[in-house]
Amino acid sequence: MSRTPWHQRAANVSFDGRALIQGRRVEAADGETFEKHSPIDGRRLGAVARGRQADVEVAVAAARQAFEEGRWSRQPPAARKRVLQRFAEKILASKDELALLETLDMGKPIRYSTSVDVPAAARCIAWYAEAIDKVYDEIAPTGPQALALITREPMGVIGAIVPWNYPMIMAAWKLGPALATGNSVVLKPSEKSPYTALRLAELALEAGLPPGVFNVVPGYGHEAGEALALHPGVDAIGFTGSTRVGRRMLEYAGRSNLKRVYNELGGKSAFIVFDDFQDLDRAAKTAAASMFFNQGESCNAPSRLLVQDTIADEFVARVQALAPTFQPGDPLDETTEMGALVDEGQLRTVLGFIASGQEEGARLVTGGRQVRADTGGHYVEPTLFDGVRNDMRIAREEIFGPVLSVIRFRDEAQAVALANDSTYGLQASVWSHHIDRAHRVARALRAGTVHVNQYDEDDITVPFGGYKQSGNGRDKSLHAFDKYTELKTTWLRIDT
Image 1 (spheres, rainbow, N blue to C red):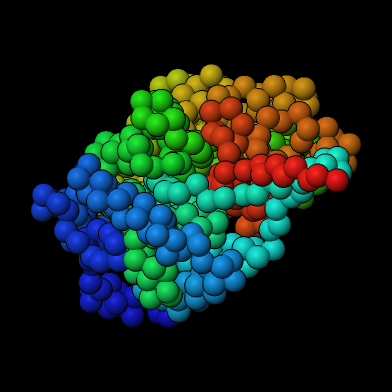
Image 2: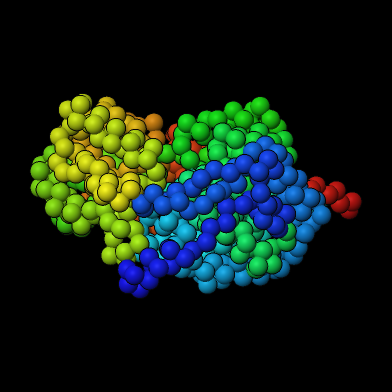
């Protein structure tokens, strides 16, 4: 599709910002709204319901009622499977609509909204649908006078709080396993990107999900999000977002009902290139593409590029040469590689980190400026720093923008020490043609995922999550079922 049709569609798209509770679109209880503007060019998208505690109360009550009545929780696994399969099919059938909402809402290029975000969300829902009747419970190895059954039961009401960088995918990662196991869900999308979550809930209803099973309350984190996390009728919270807010999720659990909290938080992932790796072009292209994808607004972005000093000059030059291919462009143009940052606040945060890097003595190799300001949108050039120390802010704090920091190392021991010298432990990457080194370093790295001679190759079948302050629990794969089910032991005495 050429540039013009996407712009024509954008001019004609309608936005419904009302909440969805008990299967119906509703205004906020107090009638309050907030204005939503597109980061692409500042255009007004519409008014969004400003959910607060009263709205969360109604949504949780609807979810609890649906759960207790067994509208979904007591349906046979095969029946739940068919509904979720139809849900996935409807997501794919609405690909262009959902992709356009995603791009207008948070600024990512339409080429990736259509080719990555929508298909990934649909695959996630379809995969968990397919897994429903393939996961068996257990029988413990007891003696002949007992039969001990170990079964998984749905928790009840799940609160899902998701971020603005991958609104559809993050929602699907929570919805897939939570719904597959029979729970009801109250989803609080980010106030910066609420529209696709609301549309997903409508598609789920069209697919046959009973009313009340999947509810969406848009609003601000300190209002709707806090109310959801504090609610005593919520059995677990699946949260993806910043480490700062993740701490609050644990605090809210302690202040309420000790609900389970599963945090997927930030990252400062290390991309380690050793001098024995011969295909530096591929490594450089992977580093740049992985870092600048989604405008750098990814928790797993490889923002610390650790390069052995013997090849550092050459490697930095290769990455620098690639930077122009990621210059920000119009997100509604299918040739655009990098789009807009999500809002003015994020723009100022990223520019502040760039200034901090320069003040602390890092060398700005390329980028570092705001561009396309005349559009009214929020765009920053792909930015590369060299001469970065691991104690600088740009090397320690999550920037969530297109800023890549090169840190040079002497040998393997120093590379591992630098990589692990972080409060985060989400992902890492090792580039080496020595099989022993690759395994040795991968084992030594404290990260939830370690890529070897690649980055970002991924699938719904593998878990996603991190060590340390990158969170707890795991999204994706069969392991996600552990987050949304309770284990029950039923011990039967058998008289012989």
